[in-house]
Amino acid sequence: MAGFQDRRYRLACGRQELVSFTARVKETDLWIMAERDLSAQAVEAIMSHRRGLEIYLAQRPQAAVSLTPLEVDPLAPAVMRRMMAAGRAASTGPMAAVAGALAEAVARDLMEYSPQVVVENGGDLYLAATEDVTVGLHAGDSPLSGRVGLAVTAEQMPLAVGTSSATVGHSLSLGRADAATIVAKDAALADACATALGNRVSGQSDLAPAMRWAQEIPGVRGALVVLGRHLAAWGDIALVDLQKETAP
Image (cartoon, rainbow, N blue to C red; front, side):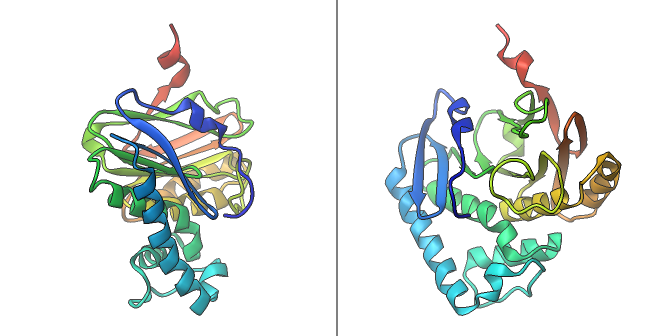
């Protein structure tokens, strides 16, 4: 999670009836939309969840570096338990789910103050809104980047959209996908499975097997992979042409 990550794509996000703001604590850098500015509450939520994770990881450093699943520890903080469960489902280490898990944990805390909340954490989204939302897909140098979006209806929310990339940001990926996206109710699961999905795609021939793999994971509602000019999708997702949506 450490290091600088260009987040200028956030400038293209927003909804007229919601207030946008950021909340940062150490490596955690969230972009949030809510019915009012909840920056102070968001920072407090981040600190609370991070504190539990930091204490646990200091006691069990293996959990911070493992690339393979760990048993769910009933004594771990709730966020870590969700990360471990997601890692077991996706066959990854628990830290593959940390961004999504924190996004959902903070979003749920903020919903006490605002029924509508959207939290983005380095490409992992947790959405709870009363109107339909379009999520833009950023896929590095792919010609599809910024052209393809996911339409999320109000009836589908709350919903998580997790994205991993071998060409955008600092996420660890063993594949070559410009974007590997998972849609699920659980943001930790979406995050871990997006990482695992991206790991499975190094060439065009990997796209169909990767989609079949995603279908077998309980809780995964949809999957999408962008590899250069190629796109594969499966599940309960609706693709939209962002250029047509923004055309005058």
